[in-house]
Image (cartoon, rainbow, N blue to C red):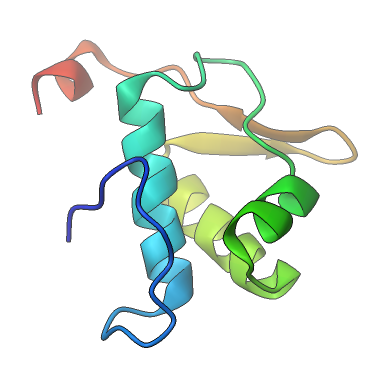
Length: 90
């Protein structure tokens, strides 16, 4: 599913909140909200912004790590991975 970068979490919808958040963050990365090798919002900020539990935020970030869109640095945060040029054409 594709999500808009400015979408809100639909807690009653058919898609789980962590999948919705992963989609929203994916869209924000593609839009350029965060540049490669720059930190995205912290877990705490995402918890507050989207009204989700920390475990839900962590699960969404794990999805993006698995996809290679972001990487985490212990004690530092989550950063946007350098993206191949093909991502721009999607």
